[in-house]
Length: 104
Image (cartoon, rainbow, N blue to C red; front, side, top):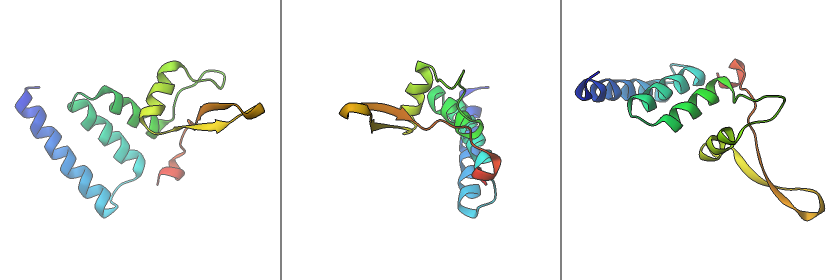
């Protein structure tokens, strides 16, 4: 795809997304997936991944996320400080998979 056609496609997609958000024409899952595509067209791989995870859930193995998931969760604003035992503070995140009904 040439740069001109990429910009044109990104512009069209952003107008479409704005209309769908403002008019309530689509589910949040579909909006997140389209926004992920827009991020890809704009070369923003972090936002692209974050939006796909927001739509489909953050991957985990045996209940634990890897360092990259923590980094992306921080960018997405999903991490926060929490008081732990004995007055300590630690970082935690909410990274559960979103169900379709939650995103509608």
